[in-house]
Length: 237
Image (cartoon, rainbow, N blue to C red; front, side, top):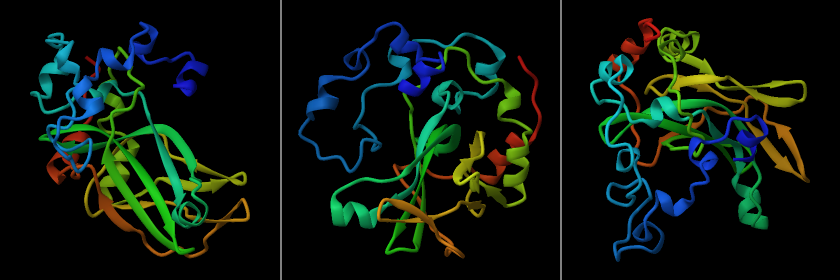
């Protein structure tokens, strides 16, 4: 929220001074007697765009996707990801340490539709690496949806088609990340840099092993057919 405010790109709901309870119900906050595995489990959450926005404008952008995209797939500006969540430090010291990254949005399938997603990378026992993707509706909503060219026929999609995409890398003594819309597809190598955390410092792990890949939050990767559709350039209507 602070990041968006600092750049003058605040969430459209916060600009209108909306509060959490305007979208989220008492049942979500206090429970309904059912123990859910996750807030992503079907039935756990009530909030959804359609509760207030009863119908989408009849534009070609809304019609061409045939109700196969969640609103956030196009209207979430970005998600904030945690790179190198260091589990050992959390266990030993009860302190969460990670490297925040943003400027990107991942796309996954969730409840039968394409939605916005997030990633997290983890380091355990000094050098064991993990990479996780999960649906994520960031509170960074923009009124104007993305242009077709931001998702279709991009360089990112072309790299994913080839089976490999570099998500993060070292540059100027820091971690940088690719920007844009990133499809999550099974069988693709998503390259990340990994670091250990000792004595308050991040230490790059040389020749880090390939991460264990996990799809969480009831999200599943896009299919090859969906990736093929994203590979086709589209107009700007």
